[in-house]
Image 1: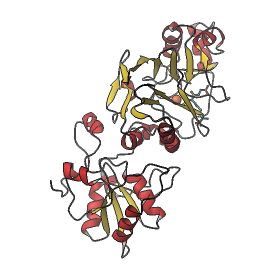
Image 2: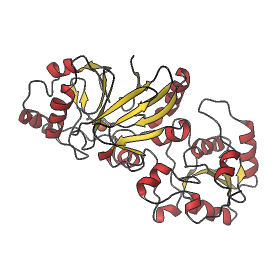
Image 3: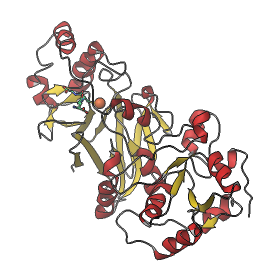
Image 4: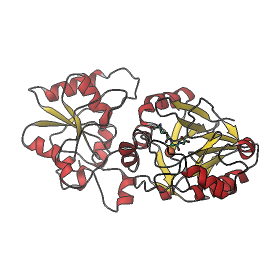
Length: 375
Ligand SMILES: N[C@@H](CCC(=O)N[C@@H](CS)C(=O)NCC(=O)O)C(=O)O
Ligand SMILES: [Fe+2]
């Protein structure tokens, strides 16, 4: 059995989907924000249920779609504990395992490219992130990188795997897809046959330009690809939306700002959760109900379109609320396509429980002292 290997040409990033053939439970490694529709289509095509998103590290060159996949596909989020990705529910330590159906993924701490970086073993495959690349390795000049730590991770941890193990890297910049531990151990130009001192000297002489998107990507990846900004003055300003392939929308707003607009009669609140969700957790008084049940690629739902058009009649802007602030993004994009001014409410009604557990306090509409009622 082989992993499904997917490629993002803009960042030369490989994303992997592994699944259990019997139960169809699946796991995705290093998903890329701009490729979420491709990834959801892949899951549909193979008939898979995504149970985990996994990061090899906090990436500097692209933004993860982990939080969006958690919302849209129901996955749980897992990350290396040393990466500072506070929004992920499962913080992995060396030797931890993740189950998907009857299959197991094993986490190995392989620091060096970043201090928290991990590699993951599944059957006779290893997903090396940017620790080991084909005939190369990740750079060590930012994010607490360390050439000495990388030397140890390569030679003591990864090269201790059986030679026949297939190596699936996090990137390749020259169109190669995979390798083996045996090939890399004997032929890798950066590390094979080198002493630690030689390797460190080589890594220190690379002088690579910094990744194009590093300033934007690292902060976003520290919150699983979603920009929460739950504190401070920023809350009371709309922010530009995270643009995605499928379109854009007017911006992201905090629950507080959304409520201020509603109170002033400037905006109408559209609740895109289902009736069942509202009944279960709570209603926002005066909200227009327009459930968003669409997966990317599905035909537009005329009921949703009619409801948002009506809500915006008279020139109101729309503020869209879902459970955790992710589903409301495609809904706001659709409303924008219809010519409406639509904002996404960050953190949704309940916030993200994984994020809450990490932050030690609750986020979301109901925890900001804004009006809502049970039933
Ligand atoms: N040109 C790329 C940066 C590529 C880059 O620095 N990649 C990192 C991985 S995040 C790396 O370790 N590259 C290893 C190398 O180029 O040898 C960009 O602007 O995003
Ligand atoms: Fe990287």
